[in-house]
Image (cartoon, rainbow, N blue to C red; front, side, top):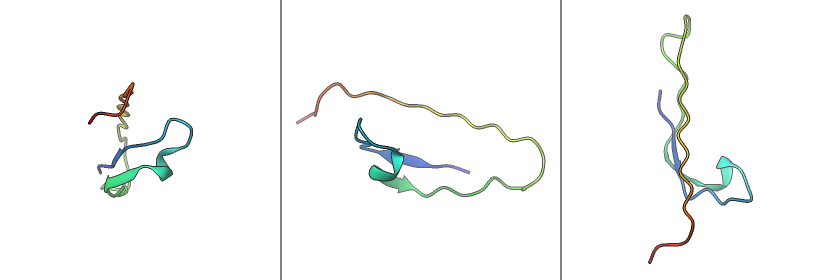
Length: 47
């Protein structure tokens, strides 16, 4: 499963960002799964 959200405002949550890839539940639904979260902070708006 993948989930990709960009342009998340610093004062809100991921639901206010732009969803590029929708979240899907891991398959198969049983067993051990890894979750990796990668966040990058952008200090200013790029032009």
